[in-house]
Image (cartoon, rainbow, N blue to C red; front, side):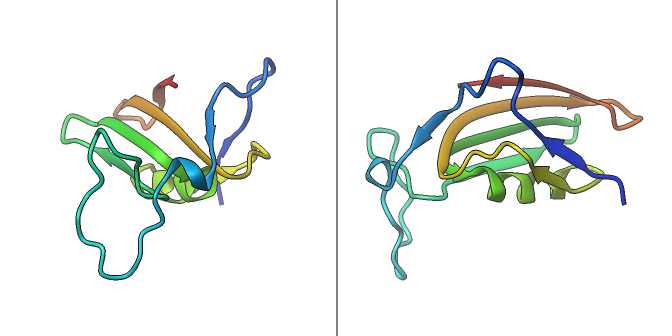
Amino acid sequence: MPVYALTVAKDGPKLRQLTVEDCVIRRSGDVTCSGSNEKPWCGEGRIGVGFDRNGRADLRAMTLDVFCERLGLQLDRPVINKTGIAGMVAFDLEWVQDADMSTFVRLTG
């Protein structure tokens, strides 16, 4: 089965890595969203593709394993984390998919 692999560029990772102290652990019964002036929920992030096939991911405190799992649901095949990066990260990602499913990606920290 074809897959995409998320890897680290040859000049190394440039992602902002977070610790549990950088986010709030959600407990059962928590229904409010974290605000922009507050710490994000641990595991918080949004990933989606619009009708125009433009994709966006806004990760505030998520592991790359979870990110790959969710991104694979938006693409035409699974995504495997081959970065070796453990723990939570924060970044924004934008991509545009062509009709033939080739993808342009821009990552910002």
